[in-house]
Image (cartoon, one colour):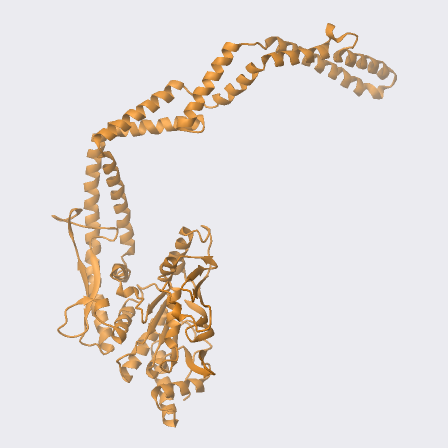
Length: 598
């Protein structure tokens, strides 16, 4: 829900910080005081069109920032969107979202979500999961036909069946993609097959062994440096075990053996040197073994230019394959395996096409069966929904209005099978759903957006919201000028119905009607003040009962004792309605909930 909004230099608002709560939040004030500016500000946060004329005169920019508390449903919708846009990490989660919009006098605007720069289109996508506004710009999901099928299906509790249908449709789409791939131009398929065969033959001819490239590199290094290796090994052997080339210098082994002999004599005199004597003997033995190893290695090293050429050629073959098919021998062999599977698919395409065609038909029949079951449930739910909306409209002084949920199908030659017919379909099934109505007798049923405006449109939406309250998952509902064209007694009905929505939603209402405002859980007053040559709008919550009674009396147009008494009676009547119809959410009244003075 919308917890807080901060506005700076927007229209006639210089600075404003306003906190909202759950339940019914009502904003009242004189005409022209700036009540609807709050709605305009919220709509900008939801991706509405920026207009530089809304920047307060004398300021270079306007800033609007809203803090939204996220319930679990909103998180489920919004977090994947933010992850897709790389604004959060995959495992990130949080309970609040801060959306800001900056509007400059030069026409430029900027948007941010939790401090990260965001596209305006993203605000629209995210905002649709947070707030539903019916105001001057008619930002309203219920007037968008694309949303109607989801609302009806949630109302009918069909989302699990739709998930099952979507799974089958996904399998069909995969089968159809494979069919299209197999039905490509035959010559192109043949060229592809020839290329795959060449690749497989080239890789197979190399008879690659994983790890052999490293072994060949090591062998090449030894062969290329054979003379150096032999020379160094021979010198090491000579230093260890004697050689004529050493002249008078004793070999290392002889010197160590002399040390061992001396330590042997010392140990006969001083037994504490016995371990040192053993160590010298062991060192002499190890040096003798090392000298033997060096002599053998020097003798084994062979200069073999022919073998060097063979190794170089093999490494070049391996490197050429790496350049074409993979950075390592395992990747090259994997490429060959994939090529074999693809070639097998091409060579057996006729058989595969036949199998896929049978699979496609079976899936189309399964989709038709599931879609028909969903459609029957939709039609039953549509009748209940229509009756409920008509009943709500009657309470709202639209007793002669007609409302209907239209469900249509479109025949298609490649659609799913329903009996002997074939219908177009998608992941929602075969139905095309749209809410239509007629506001006046004799008028044809037409799409909602074309039927009503102003107060009629708001009342239509209220009726729908009332019936769809369980299906509509939008946390915050905002109504602007819902009281146009209705009288005082109907205002009580509207107020009660709006308050009834707060079991599932936070509701914000801008109204001129005292009867409606009497149902507020939180009441805000808008006042326009002129200081010097500047106009300022102030909005303050009314926590005091006397303030609220005075505001209602002013709204009734009788700010005298008689009007004050009428205001008290309105509050008493609203409280009686609330007590008779407790809120489904079971919340205790907030500290700011106003009680009437009786």
